[in-house]
Image (cartoon, rainbow, N blue to C red; front, side):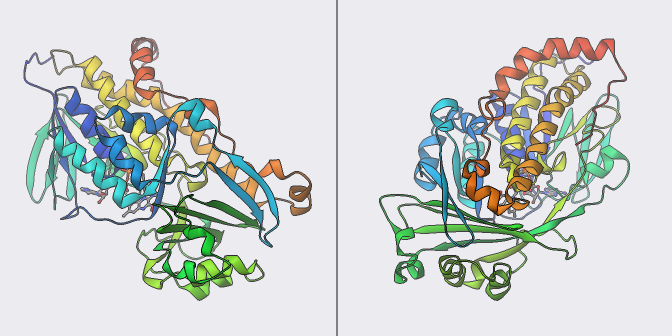
Length: 428
Ligand SMILES: Cc1cc2nc3c(=O)[nH]c(=O)nc-3n(C[C@H](O)[C@H](O)[C@H](O)COP(=O)(O)OP(=O)(O)OC[C@H]3O[C@@H](n4cnc5c(N)ncnc54)[C@H](O)[C@@H]3O)c2cc1C
């Protein structure tokens, strides 16, 4: 065991929400953190992204962040469900926020900028234009190769997203995405055109954010407004058997989006028609089976975020679970390495064991939520409108991942000592 008073050297790959959260939480604990991001600048890509109360509490724990996020985010009191022909079904009141804590829904790029700036404020060194090409580990160290340079640390947390290179290193084989059979047209736009049409003008109401979901056979269309009626985001999830190329920037076409909802209510067509094509993305929804492990053979490289566990958007938990990973990994490293660096493998194993069952259970909710909306029998739905409400499970939302990691750590380590061959059970 290496005894050292030097801070733990944590190398983090990917400046998404997983990597940034891990970096901030590791800095808070006094570790030396270097974050490598492949892009050469911070990019404002994406549209609406949701953080439930379980990750909202992480934002709220970072000084000044909640205040910066509030004006950017959506603040409706509920979600109105309607049928594809615009019959009102039910309203889901967001009382989970009062019970479990604040949630944050807003533009990915705008929220990302706030978190990025906070990471810099707490002293995270972010190296841009640093696409990690290789990972390596020994019994005592782990590192990455970036732009031909070999950089050594004590541990690597790889948050390099759905197309993770680290995943291949950890698994020892390339894990292939599968088509989920669905794709999503996604848009973020201002409300100027919507304001001109009497059908859609209410979406620009500066006094009240709107949140409406139209449901049809195997299609759902969710619209949210925010920022005092100036911004509108919509997502249209539909059947798609095209190839499985994943991209957040593939162009979308208005006529194709309309073709996915041919006999829908005029208001749905009006919203889609009001969308400038440069603001529309066609995102193929791919899926991966849960991985057999998230950690490397010598337990010094761990996958975090989408690299470890891609989510279907209908779980509304992908970004939140990525943040929970970052906090949990930092807590485990803190507890395992007080004053020395030798227990990194213990921390990494505990991280996996603490996180895996919870992540798997939340991944399952993505499938069940999607099927509740898409496979719905609409005669049944009209008679039982409550059946379309999203389950707001307390175990998902009313959860403090940091506290849980502190509470569970010792017992987890003991259980791993008792069962050194423990492996996750990846059955979805
Ligand atoms: C461009 C983009 C737009 C998105 N838009 C939305 C959206 O609108 N709505 C939504 O719900 N979700 C969106 N997501 C996904 C969402 O951000 C994630 O599902 C979730 O936040 C988990 O984040 P993550 O940090 O695990 O992965 P990601 O957010 O995918 O971040 C991974 C990061 O790793 C970097 N990276 C990858 N490979 C390397 C490498 N070899 N070396 C260094 N860096 C590397 C990537 O550039 C990226 O910054 C988007 C993701 C991306 C990348």
